[in-house]
Length: 261
Ligand code: 13P
Image (cartoon, rainbow, N blue to C red; front, side, top):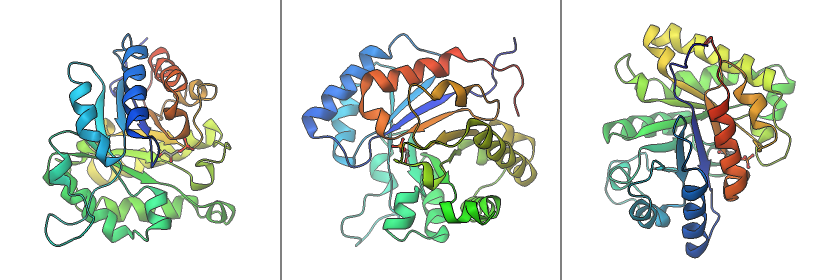
């Protein structure tokens, strides 16, 4: 069996959940429960105020941190914003373009592109979320929507910097609904995304990881990880439970696929 060229990534997006005490406890449980898994990269994406205390507590463990968002601006008079520069000392990743930010906070493709740019400037790896609404899927527009989101968000990237990117395919109708995509559908979209990336950036784009997100659970995770174009998961609800989350991490460590697509 051929080893994977792309290391799997399982990232837990805690969204706006957890008190301070719950965050410390959850991170500690995950650190303990996931400690034996080394082949998979495990990232926690807690709310902003918990990033620094968790960075201190997770020192020496393999678990890394990311942020759920960052400002499109470098710095300045932007009340309430958190800049890429502020989170960069503590985080490896930052989510950009999550559908909740696009839908509830009016983030346009231009704003998402600006965030990709500012994240890269500060050495953060953007986890770029793309995905279609239910009505777009039903209208047969899934790939058109994803093509637009990719084209706009990737505008600041070159063949040299594209490797820093992680893509998360998150169909909006699957997020928080308990209705995950079919693994084969997620595979087909992810393989299409890969072809788009390789066309845009060349062979280096085979290094970019493509995650699936949307109602991932310990039960359905193995079926997603068995698909060759899926390199990991962006987990919402199930990442708030250490047992569930670590079961997903273990599932990612078990599956080996010989061919990468
Ligand atoms: P759920 O896993 O709760 O569906 O959330 C997915 C998600 O939005 C991760 O970013």
